Length: 79
Image 1 (cartoon, one colour):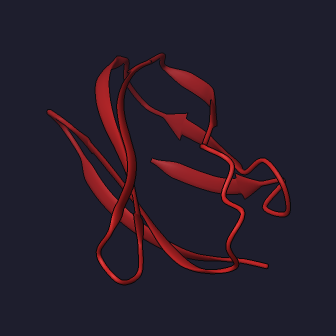
Image 2 (cartoon, rainbow, N blue to C red):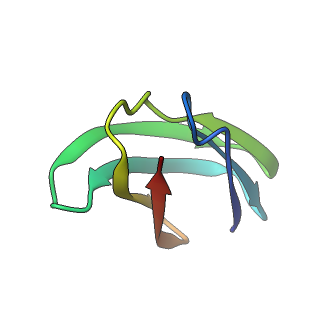
């Protein structure tokens, strides 16, 4: 996957370029380990624009994405 973060200030989103389609689970954690949200997404081959839940507290977060074919975790900072 090629993943880019968008609009990190108020309503964060990610743009994921996927080489295949299928189900993926998105889990958002605070760096302390607290799970913020989790949901399943139907990915399409190509570009996928995924809206993340609004986060009001600044800090470090981890986005974990898992499917049958791929698993990836990314850290990002919310101002």
